[in-house]
Length: 268
Image: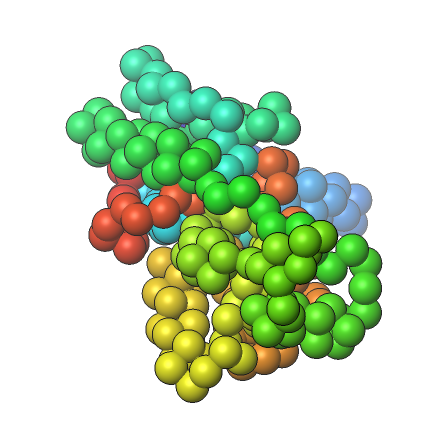
């Protein structure tokens, strides 16, 4: 892919220089024609230059606890939640890693170093399998479209409500598992944080500690913001909506895998 881009870039630059020289060498119509050629050639040259640099410069891949972040030259970061990954395939010619999402979207990572690709694929697959074992959601934590303040007030009382035949008491350990597990639904994690932090001063400190660990290892900014605000007793509707979108199959984590963050540089 790199060789054709370089050839096109050289030809476009030569055409640009020729038009630039012609515009000054010929008065009148020649100048107008030269300027028109320059106007048409300049965007093409810039696009080819961008594509060439993207091929020459390495991709930066960060594997976090909850997903994968891919950074390329002059491109917006691409973030994929682990729970959104359907399949991983190693390609031989050229060496690359094919990431197939549940939505059907395909992301390709290319690299000259096969060992680095295999290492990344193994780590990604291990975390993806861990993400598939997320805890079962707890119905009382869902907002069901309620006003954020009303929802926060309700979940803060969940562990204080007496157990009844119709409404058995919530298992506090189950709430902690939801807080810790990055593949749990965003609303469930935020609700669990809100419910646990009000139990005691020590519980609030423990929630803050665990949320900090989750945020430090996350590649999903919306989820990080929603959890951080929840640890302070706040519901950030915008961040929560963004977190739910980040965890959708179209765009995403694994639990108990160390280290928290691995950076890979894939040279093409």
